[in-house]
Structure formats: structure tokens, C-alpha cells
Length: 186
Picture 1 (cartoon, rainbow, N blue to C red):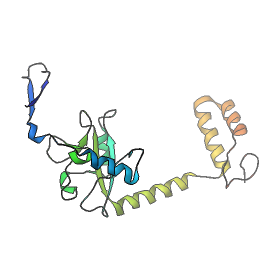
Picture 2 (cartoon, rainbow, N blue to C red):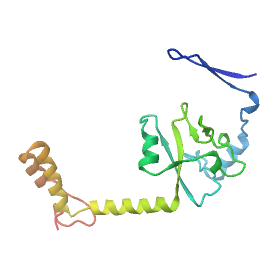
Picture 3 (spheres, rainbow, N blue to C red):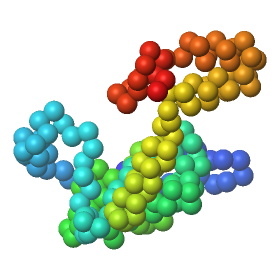
Picture 4 (tube, helix red, strand yellow):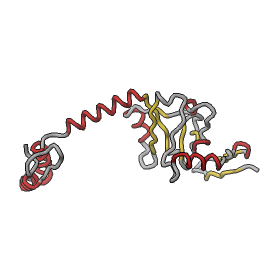
């Protein structure tokens, strides 16, 4: 028996029908699932590692474009991630066997009713370089307590005036292990 899905037509278009022969429906072995849970994740895995041909080379990331349709563009063109394909999977692994589908292009892994979850890959060395650069930028952003108070007061002055700036500067307490003094001043 075939499974038929009727997709409602849009104005001026003929309806499309997607037919999946029963032979292509993946049969799942529940015993394998139970054995995996007993082996290390008895409460259920939150995310399952994706078995790759070159796991030592690639870092993976799952991003969703449901809320932001520009997310795929940003992932590729601004962040440098590349969509993972069926060719990246370890030998003998199918997308369906690990809970994924294949997009209309025939190679990109996706998940969800509309294929909004996409797996991306990046060379691990480049990922580590980016992480180090982010850490350095974050460390530069951590200034002295006085600088933090002055920056907050200046922002308040720009938005709400000098009274707000005085209030923020006098009332702001900067905390942290590397701070000294009652207001964090060094």
C-alpha cells in the first residue's frame, strides 16, 4: 500500500502528490534503540552524535531556520558553516537510521516537518581558531570596574539624560573575583 500526501494547491498551481512506496519506509529495530540507551543514556539522549566518515576533521552544529528564514544564509555566508551531506556520513549509515531526512536537493541532511533543522559542518581547526578569537574578544570586553561603570553611565546619559547617568554611575556595583573595593573600583 502506498502512502499519499495531498499538498493544498496555491493560486494558479496544480496540486502535488508525493508517493512513498512501502519498500522505502525504514523499519526501525527497537532493540538497537534500547541497547543504545542502556549503554550510556538511560534517560534518553538529548542530541545524538552524527556518525561521520571523518569525525576527527569535522565539528557539527544543528541550526533551525523556523523562526528566522535568513538563518541558513547567515550560517553559510557570515559564520562559515557548510551544510552536512549524506556523503559525509559514515559508511552504512543512512539519514533515516539516525533520525534525519534528506532535503529536496537530494544530499543535505534536515529534520522537522518542513526541514527547518539543518546540520552544518566546519573544519575543527577553523572552529577552534574562531573559538579562540571569540574568547580573546570577550576578554578585551572585560574592562576594569571603573571602565564598566563609565560605559554604563555614558549609555544611560545618551538614552535618559545626565540624572540617569549619575544614578547608574553611583549605584552600579561591579562584581567578580578579579574586582576590588565596594563598587569594584581598583
